[in-house]
Image (cartoon, rainbow, N blue to C red):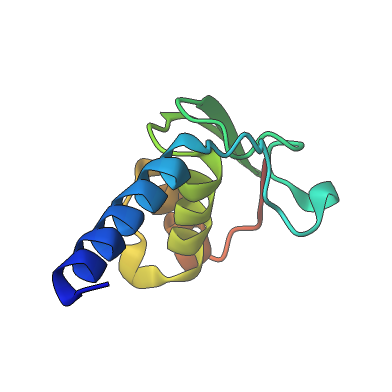
Length: 111
């Protein structure tokens, strides 16, 4: 086999492998290591989810309605990251409210 023929066959094999891999669609609904701790009860990889978050303190109750274009899990971890890292505290209205409560040392629960 000459050099050019090997190059062409290798290129074609690479293109065909990409095409075959693209046809295999991931049909999983959850990729959590511990399915019991899945934030959406085994459906965290759904896209286009509208969700309601409830934040309760002793004096107040706050409701946040959100929507995600990506997977719910990606959005959920974005929210929880903004709750832990103050530099992301202004990313959403929900994280702003949580940081207001943290700064004022008000106890709260989150669902």
